[in-house]
Image 1 (cartoon, rainbow, N blue to C red):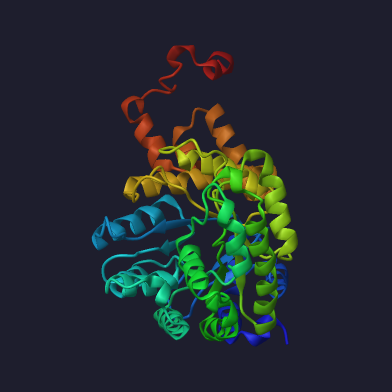
Image 2: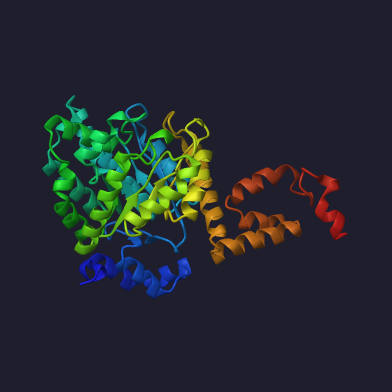
Length: 421
């Protein structure tokens, strides 16, 4: 049986909406089905998420952008997170992840699922860790049965995709001990602590089949987490990272055989000269499974401007095969992002995706660039705004001189008007 034949939820979603999906993505229906069958595309859509917008991840579908939001122990304001959700959606994000670690996590998650049609992702181990931390207990004391119960609960609520760090192995954890930054993934560090305390293998790996069973019943896409991703450019491409990538490739194959959709999470900090080899290497090892990358950030020296560092890396990553860009905000490494940070992060990643798709010759992206250039030549500011990635910013910047034909940079010395007249 094929993946779609084994996955009743996915098959039903396709029966109801394949034509609409093909139209939105400018792809043939057969190409989408083939991509899903081979595990080179995934469809984010849990039937339990009411009115979810089924979203395809995997080139040649449009490169998608995800926005991470959520509370933290130092900034616990559920209302603010709902504002960030609205900001992400308004800016054009294609999906959102709730990474909350403070407050009533169930209530926050349910509110987000009810508020947005965008696919919602989570990291289930965060909820488990919070439960232990609230009792002043070590999060690494969790039992695998509790983890499976949390995954099942969130799947029933309607969560569309979940990060599960099943590829973090005891061997990989030990290989990371000499890194500049060690392990920077919260989920990865919790699991590493669990393994080192017991000298036992990752329980998420040894119980992977049970996770697959839960995911299959709800069409939850497993985002196979990069718990050993490099947190510094100097750590990119080390033994720990590739140990995990190799394991993720094996786990993706097991997921396909079980009828479960999965995607691979990719590196964080990667120097510019290594982006191509990293992306192409990961895609090769994982049989071209959809690749979900954080940035990647091409320099470690840009706190406050990490959304720019991430956009530079994201553009290259998408050009070389990454399918899903997780945004970086100006708050990265410093604090919890505010709504404006969310907007800026989404826009930076959308610019990266657009730049990559133009370079790849994707008709929609190429035509948009061509049409906005034609509008500029005509000094047609309404068309420029309509075609821009951020129409509101164009209107805001033009507002003071909106009645002028030229922009305020050139005025009467406008090169276009000099020659057009």
